[in-house]
Length: 252
Image (cartoon, rainbow, N blue to C red; front, side, top):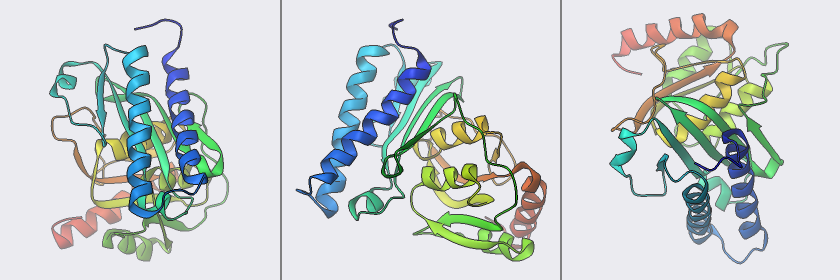
């Protein structure tokens, strides 16, 4: 490990740099749709992998866009990244796509950054705080696969449900106070959740699985079925309604 660059700064620069790469290739307008999405994934992934190979060669690595190397399971420190979360949104000119960078140590996010490049901002676990104040009375859910459980919770708590793209974009909406909660069911992977979870936890939000259990990352099976990020004041009520839904339906 090189000593010239701290973990915090490296995490933040990876998110910033990846966002600039992605905005650059989209901005010139030479590619679109599937070709643009694939180019974005490939270029951002290649840059991140090269940076980590130079600056943190001894750490493990897990990415949506790279073949999984099981050697990471023997590492205490593992970088879990999604170079482009929300490829459909990115390729169609929407703003709700993100860059996810997380350094996990012993299964827990140590440092994390979620970049929202079209908004010109990187949310960093090293310097973040959730917005407090009046409730928005809204829950954010997947734009493409809104879960029924969110409608159930919304109905019982009188909350409107809104849809958005990237997991990182949705999680940061809770942090900004634009929504009160992000509820996901139906499956994600560690690279979808590690960075948003790390930033949201650092900001003081409630973060858990839908059964209330805590996240552990760098597992052999990278699939994670569900996620709840919400203001702490609402967590007990939300988890209670989620438990009621699970008891009545047998699943989330």
